[in-house]
Each structure stands twice: as C-alpha cells, then as structure tokens.
Image (cartoon, rainbow over all chains, first blue to last red; front, side):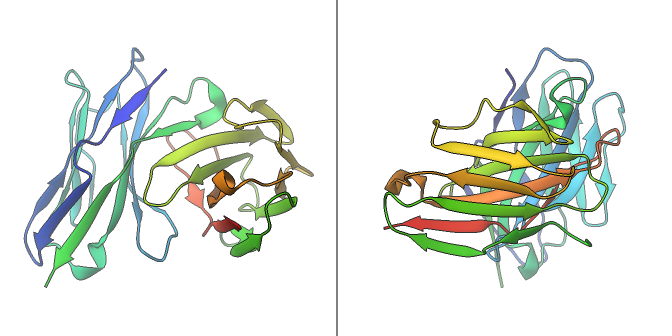
Length: 116
Length: 114
C-alpha cells in the first residue's frame, strides 16, 4: 500500500516570502500521479498542482511549483511571494491510476499560516 | 452541475439516529469518492464508485456505514445508529478519470453526533 508523509504539521511564513512544504511517499510503482491540494478555513479543498511521475520537468502553476525527486520519492511544494490568501491546510496526495480507478492516498496535511 | 454539491452542509444528530449525506458530482464525472476528515486531521478514505458500482469499500469503518450511487450521478452515504466517534466532516469528490486528472471536492458535510 502507498503511504504519504508530510513531516511538517504546521508552518508559517511572512507575506511576500517563499516557503517550501515537504512530502515524501512510498510506492513500488513506476507510473503514478502526485498532487497538492489546498484546504482554506472555508473548508472546500481545491487542487493546486499536479505532477506526472514519468515527466522529469517539475510542474509550475503561477506562484506554486514543485520539486519532484522520483528516486528519493520526494514531492515538495514551493510557494513564492506568499499571500495572506495562501493561509490554508495543504495536503499532498498520491494516485495510482492503473488500478482502483484513481483512488488517492493523502498525507496528514501541513497547516500554513501567512503572516502580514 | 458546475461543481460538486453536498448536502446538508451541517448536520447535528442524536446518538443512535440514522443520517443520510448526499453528494451530487460534476455532470459526466464517472468516479465518485467519499472521504472522512476528523478535526484538523488528514483524509480517511471510505468508499469509491465507478459508475454505480463500488469496487472498493475497504474504508467503511463498520457495517453501520453504507453508500449507494444511482444513475451514475448522485450518491448517498448512510450512517445507521450514529455514534459520537462518527462526528467528522464527510467529503465527497468526483473525477473524470482522464489520465492524471485530480479530484474536485465538495464543501463537505459537518456531522456532529450529540
């Protein structure tokens, strides 16, 4: 079974600075997908960024980028120019599409607070 | 619909009562997932549907929990004889199952058993 570990339960960053959230996972699969989801205090979870394991290039979405290290099974999220609206809980997720129709395994989350 | 809709958004029930939680996924999304999130915790997988079938029910905590999906669309999660430990936010998500497509989540139902 896959496991996803987020070792930082809580983090904080000053507005406009950069922060990196860590995620490691354990799998014997070669093809899979990784995701970061954001859950603001309003509760609705939204997809931030996705990475396909067979792509070496790191995914980027505006201020959000990932550092995907396949051999190390590491998938960190970097948020640049942090904004107050980035305050949320962030979840790393692993998806193995070949079976279980896209069932995802989630980490326990990292609570990020952006301070003014 | 435009997004995943869950109802009710909040539910307070007495211990021992049955509750039904509803999820209306994005139109055309073939896969539907139920997760449970306890206060400040991660997501616990409950069950997923591919169309109207539930190939994986492995996360249902006990036989008090059941779920169904009809017409490849709306899903209902039923908890019978609720217990205080059932208190949590129940999240529903749907996916188009296009390669690498992530989930679209609903806003969840906060269940409180008193």
